[in-house]
Amino acid sequence: MMISACVLIRTERGRFDEVVERMKQFSETKSVMAVLGRYDVVVDIEVPDYDSLGRVVMKMGNIGGVVFTETLPELKMEVE
Amino acid sequence: MLNACILVKTIPTRIVATLSDIKRFKQLRKVYPVYGRWDIVAFMEVSEYRELKEITAQINAMKGVRSTETLASL
Image (cartoon, rainbow over all chains, first blue to last red):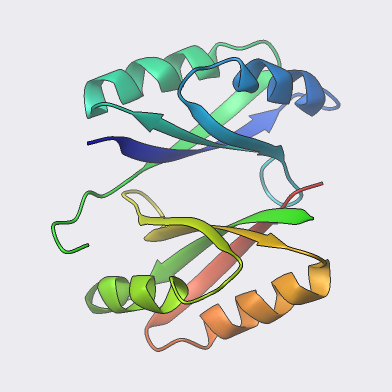
């Protein structure tokens, strides 16, 4: 049962292309896009459990050019 | 094609209902309820910005939706 999460990222000015490429290299990444608005990059990831979610988001936060991340983890609901 | 991530805030009692309302959009790629400052995250794929504007207007008009934030892809 995979858990999705939406990772909102702010990058250093002009580095969002580089960050987008690096995010694509994560096996957990399902989709990544540079965006307009209050964030620069949005990444949809899928992980096996909440523990690994923390590890992946930490690694993403350490990518060069990333200055801020906000993660919205999926709220697993019984009713589907 | 244009992708977008729409963040939705609802009143707590309307999360499930809003989720099923959003699932009716044909442009929907993926949607899930979330923890954190937002309640629902929806990924859409549209052909042009105008279509995105219509979708966000419809979501904002849904019963119990407090606010939305649309992050449109470049």
